[in-house]
Amino acid sequence: MKKNFGILIAGFIIILGVFILFFVQGREMPGQLPNLSMKQPSDKADNQTIATEESPLPIPPLLKDRNPDPNKAVFQLTAQNATKEFVPGKKTETMGYNGDYLGPVIRVRKGEEVSVKVKNNLDDITTIHWHGLEVDGDKDGGPHSGIQPGESWTPKFKIEQPAATLWYHPHPEQETGRQVYKGLAGLFLIEDEVSDRMDIPKEYGVNDVPLIIQDKRFNSDGTFQYDLGMHDVMNGLQGDTMLVNGAVNPFFEVPRGMMRLRLLNGSNASVYELNFSNNQTFYQIASGGGFLGKPVKMNKIVLGPAERAEILVDFSDLEKGETVQLENNGSEFMKFTAKSESPKEYTIPTKLTTIDKINPDDAVKTRKFVFQGMGPMVNINGKQFDMDRIDEKLRMNDTEIWEISNESGMGMMDGTVHPFHAHGVQFQILDRDGNPPPANETGWKDTVLVNPDEKVRVIATFKHSGVFMYHCHILEHEDAGMMGQFKVGE
Image (cartoon, rainbow, N blue to C red; front, side, top):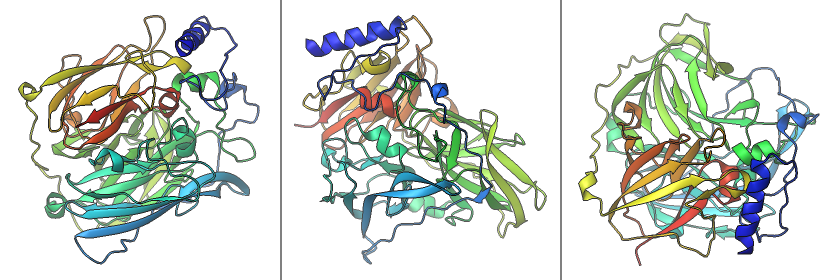
């Protein structure tokens, strides 16, 4: 009763626009957020957009597989504190896996048995969540799988899903936003026989390039600004400086031909609308869970937090030395410069893969998930996260329809877009407000944007047992309690 009263009081204060916010100390209130400030981003006297010289795009290294057996893979990751110069001459305190910021790319194959030893050299508890990977709950890396400072966790699992661009990041209760913001994230790539035979760019770091896109706020001394103001509590922390693979103002030399870009929105809260400055078209070939049935021609793409997309871009019309910028909502943040002719010509495939559509008639149950509330009282179905409570119980191998609706505006003001993510499963979108999804959302997904007052229906078959999370992937909302748990199996 005490918790519910605290949440109602906080909601009353925010709705009326009162500039006082009270938090109960400790962990008693489920919606509590660390380091809360009443300041807006604009109130920060030392907040600044970082302007630096152009720098080459860093390419995250491929993590070495320590097992020579082609059917098994063994990897090692260490989460550690570090410093990095985003601004020349100014050190920023960061976190990274095996380095100073972000982490290496883990690349595996379907059918492989994988083991990852994760060492925690941080000062705080952490976890590592395999975002998009279909594994049992005890291998998923949610908040139950905490790794204490100085300790290790070694999950083992078999890759049982098709080629895809996934990622990994920490998931400790109430600390996910801060740890991801400071740099803990990396890509997890799956290959299979379908990707092997596909005639598309595959040379990693040359014509098959990952772009981990994030936005940050910096203080004038170069440090990250992660003290949450009211605007951040309401909407999640959104920055004014774009990073790609951890670099500000990066450039990349591309062949005058086809490029494959693996895009990840690795931000805490921002939704990106990406396009090229010359308005050229490109083809999306994959969404978060793998290849689409066929390429989708586009000239812009919208990615919410945690969403991924693979696109094919043909730079053959550029003159040698000519540049084109990648833009977010009309603001340039990365430059591509054409160099020599491409050593190989590619054509856009007419078909990519076969996606077996799940029949809605096979669904044994429809569940409803309603995003509600604002600021510290965000919730799903009126409940905030409680690690000791299972919110939904499912049976193994059942097919279900999940109906996700966004009522966070409560009819009183503009609402917030919420990206819905479910752990341990890939789903298919049935419809948005009763309408078929756009062509680039007809493949496998694990995260879907739900707009204010929108209802999205997805369908999935649950093939892995254990306890899993479902939550908003605006990380400040997740940390505030916009998360629940579902259990598959007994």
